[in-house]
Structures are given as structure tokens and as C-alpha cells.
Image (cartoon, rainbow, N blue to C red; front, side, top):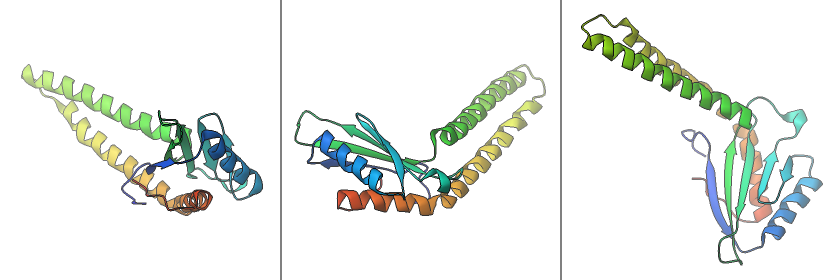
Length: 166
């Protein structure tokens, strides 16, 4: 799992039914104290138990798709932080982008009117804040890396084959 990926993911085809896949995941989650989770109709989540969880703890979200060929299912896995952590970073990047856009539009209008535009200095400041946010996210990913590997190996052991992370 490369450190350049914000949210590592994978996609695989399995030759089992949705019900068989869900029962394997549910049975494994019931019999282990190492992980907790949720199994729904076309959605599963594998998490670290509450007593071991911290702010940067990852989780594996599995989406189950049934293509037209009913003998196979497609599993899409996504490793990432809790949705609330992801939302904070996403909203921060969106706010920085919108503020930079507004500063750029206002600053360029001031320049076109041949007036000084000191607000354009906000754009490099916003870019620096975005880089700092990215570095914080990378640091958080490093803090949760060991737990992500544990979840990954747990899932590989359940499926009895190696999973390639894209």
C-alpha cells in the first residue's frame, strides 16, 4: 500500500453468491475479537474494535455488486478513515478551493480596474494550508498503517487469496 494513495482500494470478482460472501464475512466477524463490523444487503464494513480505535483508525468498506452473470459477484474494497474524518478533510479542501477562487476573481478584477490587489496573496497561503492538510493526512495514514495492514490480512485470510491494492 503506497503512501501516495489517500484511500487505497481494490476490485475483485468472486465466484460465489452475495449470500455466501456475506455469510463468510458475518461469521468471521462473529468469531473474532480482533475486528468488529457491519454486514448489510450489498455493503460490509470491517473495523478495528472500539477499545483499540483512535482518531486515525482505518476501516475497510466492501461494496457487493451483482453483474448480469449471476455466478460471479464484484467486490469493491475501500480502505479509509471513519467517514467523519474523511468529511472534515474533504470539506477543508473544498473551502480552501472556493476561498482561493473568490480571492482570485476579486484580485483579478481589481487588477483589471488598475487598482492594487493585495488579496492575491491569499492564494499561495491557501495552497500552503492545503499542503499542510495533505501532510497531516499522510501522517494520520502512517499512524493507522499497522491497523490497515491487520484489516487487509484479515480480509485476505477470509478470501484465501492475495488482494492487489490499486
